[in-house]
Length: 618
Image (cartoon, rainbow, N blue to C red; front, side, top):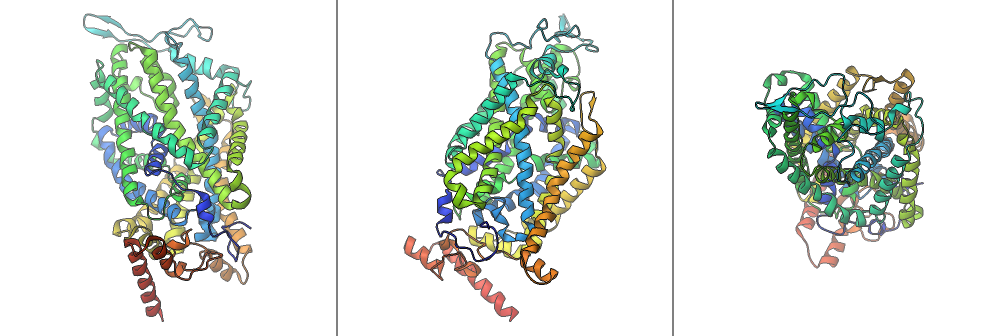
């Protein structure tokens, strides 16, 4: 039996103290910023913006941020901080829905496997940039074909002459596909080919870096983020200044942000804005909940919510300027429209932008800075993924695993490295695309919808707001309540329906995935969904009585649900911790701090509200 199970279990009173907390005031805030501001801000948002109305895209983007992003972000932080528990044990709040926590772990585990492969690619390019001449600058290498042509525009007195790029391949594209991936050695996803040992070693290095940074949990990763969460902004600023000073930069910026308001009449634009918000903030992966669980009970997560969510949005917009200013320069040099050089995802990071770097003076320097920025952006998110998995499992088995958390972390990293080896093969990119398309698609939306409904409908919006009042000193206003009850779930449901109706099979370039691979991907997405009813079945079977009685009992909070420290418990949470000796946690506060603080006044108010409600019911 684990700590998240209902029943009378002898738990250590100092359970939460042994668990640890952040050691610095900014550890939590910087970790959240690093987690949310990731690779998607650089290679997804700018492309989504220009293809969905340019500057007009910011209207649905910020509207969806207000309706869906900020409320769900605050909800997940509140759950974690109030309980000081990870994604599995937090379902003491309603054990019937513990399967949602298991689904979170499955999703974040699959994402962590392929996300670190992307970091391995970044490391490969980072090392390749340590040279006087970038290896993807010219043709003539052993991996190049007869189709390779250096895409450099020729000039006359009137400027660049247009290039005929049809039927040719740039050196950077062949470097990526034929040298880094060596994809010509694979016939498809069913025939991955041989392991690329240079990628295998880069992946090993990526996992070694992640392990060393999470070795001591949040105490070590909380210090690393002081560098990894802030240094990308310095590099982004340098790339932005360099980009906007290039000739033709305004051409790219204009292409990026020119408003096309007629796009707002299309439902696709609004769905794309909601998807960008949903995935860029990392809601539903468990990372936010995990980070918040290491906070002190009265940390001002309300303020932190707005800092992180708005900072994430602003970073995405700035990254767009840095990317498209360079693409504008590149289009002018080649004499082609911007839309012919603009791409999204790996195509931007590993083909287009590296090609643009070759056109700049001191190209290895700028290339190194760009890939170092991608490395730090990616590592922050990977820290969160691994910390989520380790925290969730160690919270379930605190006595056996928590003392050996470093060893367990190492075993998790080793296991994920071995599972990721297929991604280092010649056909590994096909597997990466499959994981990217299905591991966190509709399954993640189902998990977030379930979490939102379980907290607001089953546990109760009034009770949840009262918990936040106890923790922060004020209740969430009408805006948060309306979003949690109606707007956010409705938006997510629309996204889920849209993703199903507009389903398109996976593809990579001209390669179409076989039916069995599509079925495997769909199964990956469905498996996380199926864990939710499976968890319900287990919770119901553990109870006694009729089916209805079992459902009622399983949906109620566990006896020891609430703040982890006895001194923070008041009202209905008094003396519900196993081993609790004091019927009045308020007295613990008074003995510890020598008086009543504003938070204890809040506790008294909450007690009074509960008493008044009980009297009205009687």
